[in-house]
Length: 132
Image 1: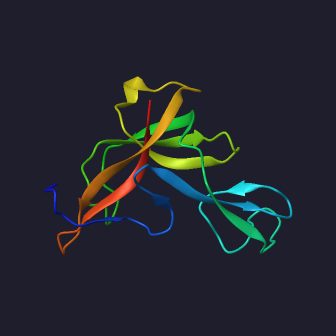
Image 2: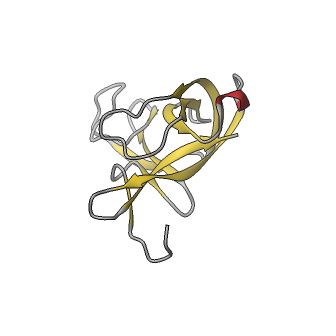
Protein backbone atom coordinates (compact mmCIF):
# COMPACT_ATOMS: atom_id res chain seq x y z
CA UNK A 1 0.00 0.00 0.00
CA UNK A 2 1.28 3.45 -0.81
CA UNK A 3 1.43 5.99 2.05
CA UNK A 4 -1.38 8.12 0.56
CA UNK A 5 -3.68 5.21 -0.41
CA UNK A 6 -7.21 5.50 0.88
CA UNK A 7 -8.37 2.71 3.20
CA UNK A 8 -11.73 1.73 4.55
CA UNK A 9 -13.10 -1.12 6.67
CA UNK A 10 -14.83 -3.97 4.87
CA UNK A 11 -17.85 -3.30 7.13
CA UNK A 12 -18.48 0.04 8.86
CA UNK A 13 -19.11 0.16 12.60
CA UNK A 14 -17.69 -3.25 13.48
CA UNK A 15 -14.06 -2.42 14.27
CA UNK A 16 -11.77 0.56 14.55
CA UNK A 17 -8.07 0.94 13.86
CA UNK A 18 -5.15 2.68 15.59
CA UNK A 19 -5.28 0.91 17.93
CA UNK A 20 -7.28 -2.04 16.64
CA UNK A 21 -10.45 -2.70 18.62
CA UNK A 22 -13.78 -4.43 18.09
CA UNK A 23 -16.93 -2.39 18.67
CA UNK A 24 -19.49 -4.21 20.79
CA UNK A 25 -22.36 -3.38 23.11
CA UNK A 26 -23.36 -4.07 26.71
CA UNK A 27 -27.01 -4.45 27.64
CA UNK A 28 -28.14 -2.31 30.59
CA UNK A 29 -30.94 -4.77 31.44
CA UNK A 30 -29.34 -8.24 31.31
CA UNK A 31 -25.70 -7.02 31.41
CA UNK A 32 -24.64 -9.28 28.53
CA UNK A 33 -21.94 -8.10 26.12
CA UNK A 34 -22.40 -8.70 22.41
CA UNK A 35 -20.57 -8.30 19.12
CA UNK A 36 -21.16 -6.70 16.70
CA UNK A 37 -23.14 -3.70 17.94
CA UNK A 38 -26.85 -3.96 17.30
CA UNK A 39 -29.83 -1.69 17.99
CA UNK A 40 -31.10 -4.15 20.59
CA UNK A 41 -29.76 -6.87 22.88
CA UNK A 42 -29.62 -10.27 21.13
CA UNK A 43 -30.06 -12.00 24.55
CA UNK A 44 -33.10 -10.26 26.05
CA UNK A 45 -34.38 -7.91 23.33
CA UNK A 46 -33.87 -4.75 25.38
CA UNK A 47 -33.06 -1.57 23.45
CA UNK A 48 -31.08 -0.08 26.35
CA UNK A 49 -27.58 -0.88 25.19
CA UNK A 50 -24.31 0.96 25.72
CA UNK A 51 -21.57 0.94 23.05
CA UNK A 52 -18.30 -0.58 24.32
CA UNK A 53 -14.84 -1.27 22.92
CA UNK A 54 -14.01 -4.93 23.47
CA UNK A 55 -10.72 -6.37 24.69
CA UNK A 56 -7.87 -6.65 22.21
CA UNK A 57 -6.98 -10.18 23.34
CA UNK A 58 -8.62 -13.54 23.88
CA UNK A 59 -8.25 -17.31 23.62
CA UNK A 60 -8.52 -19.42 20.46
CA UNK A 61 -11.51 -21.81 20.50
CA UNK A 62 -11.54 -23.28 17.02
CA UNK A 63 -9.97 -22.81 13.61
CA UNK A 64 -9.71 -23.89 10.02
CA UNK A 65 -7.91 -22.82 6.86
CA UNK A 66 -9.80 -21.22 3.96
CA UNK A 67 -8.27 -22.54 0.73
CA UNK A 68 -10.69 -21.06 -1.83
CA UNK A 69 -11.86 -17.45 -1.92
CA UNK A 70 -15.54 -17.00 -1.02
CA UNK A 71 -17.75 -15.02 -3.45
CA UNK A 72 -16.83 -11.33 -3.46
CA UNK A 73 -13.61 -11.83 -1.45
CA UNK A 74 -10.78 -9.69 -2.89
CA UNK A 75 -7.88 -10.93 -0.75
CA UNK A 76 -5.44 -13.77 -1.09
CA UNK A 77 -5.88 -17.37 0.05
CA UNK A 78 -5.14 -19.41 2.02
CA UNK A 79 -5.97 -17.64 5.27
CA UNK A 80 -7.00 -18.74 8.73
CA UNK A 81 -10.52 -18.50 10.08
CA UNK A 82 -11.56 -19.22 13.63
CA UNK A 83 -13.32 -18.34 16.85
CA UNK A 84 -11.67 -16.32 19.63
CA UNK A 85 -13.28 -15.90 23.05
CA UNK A 86 -12.74 -12.49 24.62
CA UNK A 87 -12.55 -11.81 28.39
CA UNK A 88 -16.07 -10.31 28.16
CA UNK A 89 -17.38 -13.80 27.30
CA UNK A 90 -18.06 -12.97 23.66
CA UNK A 91 -16.91 -15.46 21.03
CA UNK A 92 -15.87 -13.69 17.84
CA UNK A 93 -15.78 -15.32 14.41
CA UNK A 94 -12.58 -13.94 12.95
CA UNK A 95 -9.83 -14.08 10.41
CA UNK A 96 -6.57 -15.56 11.77
CA UNK A 97 -3.22 -14.08 10.79
CA UNK A 98 -0.87 -17.05 10.70
CA UNK A 99 -0.68 -20.55 9.20
CA UNK A 100 -2.74 -23.38 10.70
CA UNK A 101 0.24 -25.20 12.21
CA UNK A 102 0.70 -22.32 14.67
CA UNK A 103 -2.70 -22.76 16.34
CA UNK A 104 -3.74 -24.64 19.47
CA UNK A 105 -6.89 -24.70 21.62
CA UNK A 106 -6.87 -21.97 24.29
CA UNK A 107 -3.90 -20.23 22.70
CA UNK A 108 -3.63 -16.54 23.65
CA UNK A 109 -4.53 -14.32 20.69
CA UNK A 110 -4.12 -10.58 20.05
CA UNK A 111 -6.26 -8.33 17.84
CA UNK A 112 -4.88 -6.54 14.80
CA UNK A 113 -6.01 -5.42 11.37
CA UNK A 114 -5.17 -6.65 7.89
CA UNK A 115 -5.55 -5.49 4.31
CA UNK A 116 -7.80 -7.90 2.42
CA UNK A 117 -7.93 -6.42 -1.05
CA UNK A 118 -8.54 -3.37 -3.20
CA UNK A 119 -12.01 -2.42 -4.43
CA UNK A 120 -12.70 -1.32 -8.04
CA UNK A 121 -12.13 2.34 -7.03
CA UNK A 122 -8.63 1.59 -5.71
CA UNK A 123 -9.62 1.81 -2.02
CA UNK A 124 -7.72 -0.63 0.20
CA UNK A 125 -10.15 -2.71 2.26
CA UNK A 126 -9.24 -3.68 5.83
CA UNK A 127 -10.66 -6.07 8.40
CA UNK A 128 -9.82 -7.30 11.89
CA UNK A 129 -7.83 -10.44 12.60
CA UNK A 130 -6.27 -12.22 15.55
CA UNK A 131 -2.75 -13.61 15.79
CA UNK A 132 -0.82 -15.54 18.48
